[in-house]
Image (tube, rainbow, N blue to C red; front, side, top):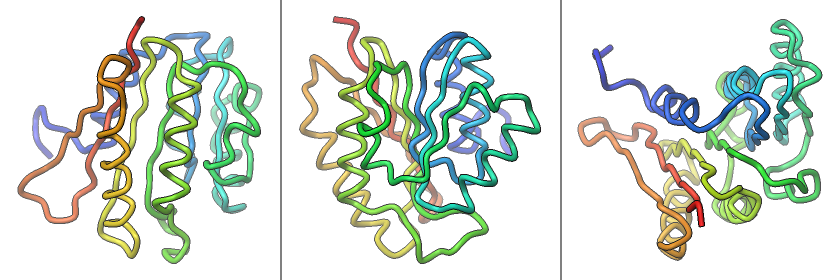
Length: 189
């Protein structure tokens, strides 16, 4: 472990914590084992709301258990649905949206996020993002379909209007197949 340069997920959490305030609305587009969902629930507090999505029943169940253990069952609404369907469930503007792509840690590595569904979910999530809001994507490339998802996301990011969105990438240059962070901020105007 290094003193200042943290793992990608913790860098994303630091950035999210600087944007998301109590009472905010956030989306965890890939709940996985629930750690990002719980983190967002802690940021928004009891007055806020978090929407969480995952296609796997196991992920939704684990996340619900983690939230219950930490007193956030009323703060988070969980859906066993793909993130590409988030507009079917979320209609209000959001302050933050989080994606942790790839597969469920400890789960079936054959069930992964994909280029088309993720790009659609990011596009839809950005449409929901409030001015001054933030989107965080942890991108993994070391699994089948990962490189294609990376290419599709980066191609989409290049189409974003530079006056409306600022999209940046933080990558580790000396770590092969390490996850990297894409952060997108929506303009205040």
